[in-house]
Length: 126
Image (cartoon, rainbow, N blue to C red; front, side):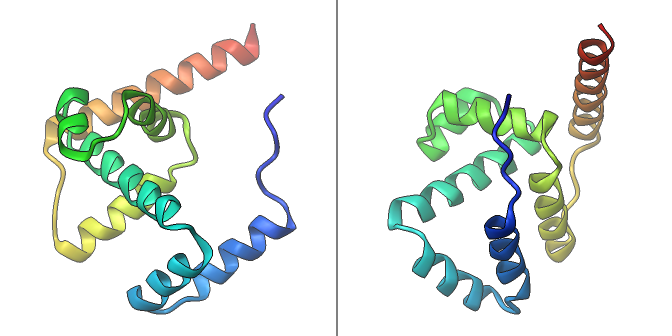
């Protein structure tokens, strides 16, 4: 059974991050709370998510980010089976920068989400 992530401490952390009003205060908080390598790993994972969202192939993501294929696979799993945290953050950035996803990438993401949901239902229903 998967360990429950949400508890009083993680909720408090999320509330603290959500309360920060500017990019600069978020950066200052992350620099204080994370080691340099943790902070860089978070940034790398988000870049991997952004590139996957754009439809970039694993080999190109490895070359551009230096991320391992295991990291890329984990981020991909979160994009398909996760709680849409990456998607929400990516959508917010796209709105801010007035970017759109290519229709082919949108269709592929919708297909992968639907396939993941069907698999989840099959596992739950036998």
